[in-house]
Length: 124
Image (cartoon, rainbow, N blue to C red; front, side, top):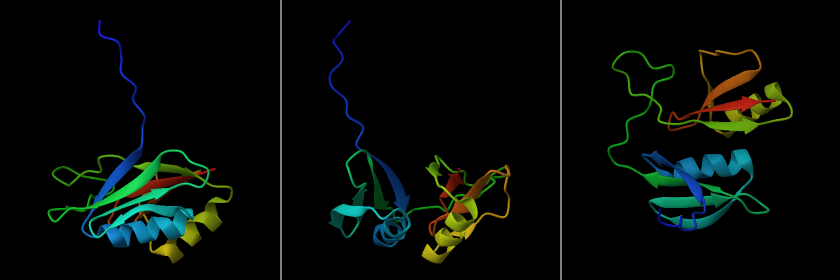
């Protein structure tokens, strides 16, 4: 077997019709700073290092549906974000530009939709 080369997880990339707009939302929400900033590509990095979050403009972007039904565009992934106060964090996410999803499958988790429709979960 071939020796495994070094792999370093760098970031998760979210497609969006507007990379700048979605990056600005997560910048406000998370308080992270921009590492790369181009018109169609933005990468945010957390303070203290670690894997980042990037945003790529995609002209053919299709907004996912939550929860998806038959034939609906489904989410490909979601982010889990731990918070210390679920209600305050949900309210803050809304002031940043998010929407609380109508369907909430758990009492101790809030499904939130970012401006491009990507679901993410806030949890304690």
